[in-house]
Length: 245
Length: 245
DNA sequence: ACCTCGCTTTGACATGGATCAACGAGGGCG
DNA sequence: CGCCCTCGTTGATCCATGTCAAAGCGAGGT
Image (cartoon, rainbow over the protein chains, first blue to last red):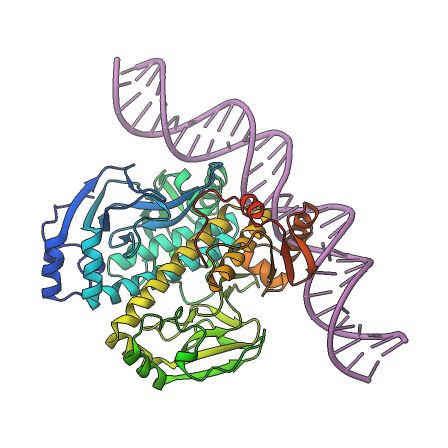
């Protein structure tokens, strides 16, 4: 994916989906003054559990994970951060989770103190942040259902369905195409940490889904889905079609 | 627990912890006009997944669960709702989860449309709602770590630790006492649904913890913890002491 | 072209929790 | 007082997933 450099808000690919989405021209001018862009390489730590954060930021491009590592090495990823997602929260100095860039990531950053003032004075940012927090809350709870009650196969299927939906939504589509190819932002290990499984089980499930004809694996990081609806049904789509993100 | 009836906001036990916490006297007057109280018996459905909600509400007393039931009957509880927690979200007509009263519950209700207008016009409510949503988001993510990576024993221990912390916080204490007795708001089955386990496994873990001297069980619904710190360590307390809720 | 290194896959086996089944204990009601 | 009904506990067995081990496989460097 080639990216042209971003210079100003009106030119920003996440202008209408990030924390600034509801801002009017005047509010945007204020944001414009205090924002700065930063690009970090894959593997960079954007936040560490318990450590103070100087900046709050939105992801403009790339992918990051939010995770907790227990003393004994067990790790659980609690969120996949993609463009327009927000890192950090106003009113708290540190993140309770590690946030790590999985690919090269470009951020739109705000100095924490300045942003907190802004939230207080700019209702459009507070309401947007509220909406985003509520959306993520729904998403986190959906994921809790997956972690708590789904089999390994269903976990992998759910992940693919959610990723496809999220990609479609970002492209402005209502639902994913019948057939599509997904690029996995995560390695098998990172995926296992997200799914609450081991690498081995995750890998076996991919193999099993391939043997069942539900997916093809042109490369380790690419998944071709010949029939999305069938995949969604296998994932245990009971209700509405799931929430985006 | 005996409750005296609530009649006005200034008299309300959740006045300083609910969605209205940041409201000043004038804002409270507006809320006062549109609120209504309702008490429902244990077992009542406060919301059903996908069904439109007429009211948004805060829990004043009692306990409710938020859960998803899959077609095949598997159920995962994604949140335990206690006094001051908010049910529903402005800007959306229906809840993605079932919300069910576990004990008798008293609610402070707002007609949905009126409340949504209020959120738009009252920044103190929007910021409070944002803070509450972000707190619940942290809590949901903590729970995802428990569901994804913890053993059955650790799940039960984590639940007890969190419940004790939440009770302590509600009593205005910083941390739970050394020794304390908890009343469980949930039956074994409801607990199992929350922990992502079966009833049998949950029950066996209680027995095991009792045999290990970590808890005593004066009745099915009561747990005496002789040494909270020991319990917390067994629960796998690596870091800070955990987030409240 | 070959070697090496990291990631992924596959295999063999162990085990924690689910499942199936039965028994116990308390509480309300006839 | 005793029956029944619900909830919780305990036991026996099974199976999905974890664990340990080794073998592909692809990319980059020499």
